[in-house]
Image (cartoon, rainbow, N blue to C red; front, side, top):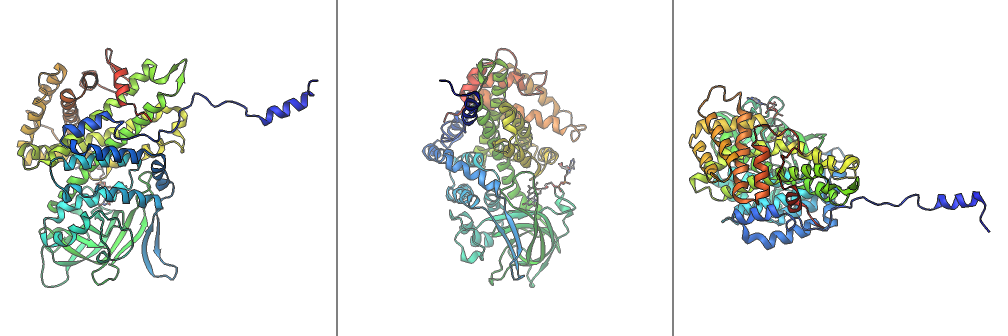
Length: 560
Ligand SMILES: Cc1cc2nc3c(=O)[nH]c(=O)nc-3n(C[C@H](O)[C@H](O)[C@H](O)COP(=O)(O)OP(=O)(O)OC[C@H]3O[C@@H](n4cnc5c(N)ncnc54)[C@H](O)[C@@H]3O)c2cc1C
């Protein structure tokens, strides 16, 4: 006998209303290194093939679901500042979620903060850059203090007295987040304090003053700093390289968080910035109320001294943004390999394939350029390599960082509506995407730096075209493009006004030259046909006819 109508409806309401199908799954439990052919090839090519096994193990660890979750947690629970303790004493203490500390510990124990200094040698920068590239895909924010610690070493070395005291603990593979004097720690991290309210790019406008403590002045001597610093990221670092006006002009200083007598240094954290991205990383506003600091480099040569650090942080911006592009396109490729629409898996729909291939090309161009500069860093004793570092760090920082927001957005669109949701990886990738372009010298500042390098060291131009010439004859479009670019350097009128256009083209020429020499033909030909064509490359997904999109997509797609 049939149940009455009302009863049948009730049981239907209790059952699932629908089956969940045609959806993707989390991209987890995969090897970030072994699933990245472009990175592996670049590592081998640029001189760090010896690191393969280590990178493969690192890539497996990072790709585990539990490890990837750390990146989510470190951003879901932002750092908090206690300016005072509950009794009213100054505390200047930033508290982080344990996930942040785990990420920091991994970075430091794997040498992301120092390996080229502690273990120099052929491929040292390349291997480190690959590790940073991989780990930043898990979480980008904590990389800020890791980068600053790494970058501080060349500046510190300008003053051997300070370097001999500090470098061993800076380069030690020990993460010690305790809020105690540096003397009580075995491992130290370093931040940077340049930017003030009235000027970030133009640090010569700094008003923070430095007063000698004793009769002695100059490198290694003690000063007291008075002023403010409007952006000080990672304020729990053990010391900061800071700029201040000494009697003989703007100078660089090493300012510890604790004084050698075990008291708190007069460096107060006023508040943490409320940032749209880079959330796991604390960035603060600080007051220096007679903070003890030692001069680094010559008095009055502060910019010259700290630029050694800035050059390295700019390089890491390239690595970080290239990593952001890989993280985004990996998600897009993964999703589109599992989701169907209109009767076909998305990555088989011709137009989506065009978009995915185009995003993969962008990412591949970025990693090729980044790893080429890493190799140049490994060989600075070679004049050509040194000139490339000087010019092309600015070119690459400008171009790769600036291309990343559009790339992140387009990758998000591949996911559809769920890509916009906070429980997808994309809001974090997207909010992170403009940061590298803006800090450590914004876009225009990088372009002006390219011009400055060309004016101060004209040989950089020759080195740049020598590098491009390695690809001559391999692709007719590239040959034409380089010839046209060369003409720009014959006409120096309005070069400042035209700098973005020229630097854009320099970056594309360099990426294309690298891909033409080293990437599979499908990648290199498509890159040149789309990026170097006279018609321009306005949106992703506009690759011309004849491109082997399926091959490009297959090469780039990570498999769990
Ligand atoms: C998340 C975050 C963390 C940061 N952490 C730190 C930190 O730890 N330590 C630190 O010292 N700083 C830090 N900064 C500051 C950062 O380095 C500066 O914001 C940056 O250098 C730009 O300076 P500004 O904000 O004063 O902008 P401005 O210098 O005012 O520049 C504004 C715009 O003008 C352009 N511009 C400047 N000069 C020229 C010119 N001559 N011609 C054409 N265009 C020009 C710039 O490219 C930029 O687009 C951080 C910033 C961010 C966003």
